[in-house]
Length: 128
Image (cartoon, rainbow, N blue to C red; front, side, top):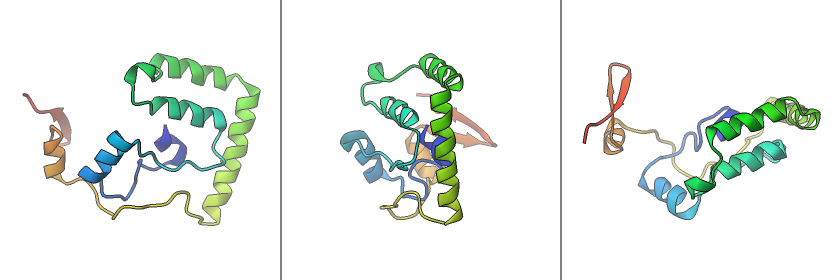
C-alpha cells in the first residue's frame, strides 16, 4: 500500500541487505509516511504492517474497504486534497522521505539466498 501511495518501491534506493531485513522484522522499521496522506489509507496500511498475520486484514477485507471508500464522499474529498498536496510537493521537488541506507539493489546471489531463481523472465521458487 505504501508503494501505491508514494509511487516508489518501499525503501527505494536503499541497501536491502541483512541489516535492513533485520530492522524490518525485529525492530518494526517502517518507511516514512507523507503527512498529507489520507488518514483512512494510512490507518489501513498500518494495520497491514502488523507483525501478527492474524491481525492483518485479508485481501477480501481490503477490497471491501476500498469499495466503501469509493462510495464515501468524505474519503474521496480527503483523498483529492492529499493528491493536490502531493502534486505540489513533487512540483517543488521536495524530498518526500529520508534515506538512511546506502544506495544498492538486490543482487542475484541475494535473490538466490531467499529461494528465488530467475530463468528467462520467469520467477519460480526453488524446489526444496
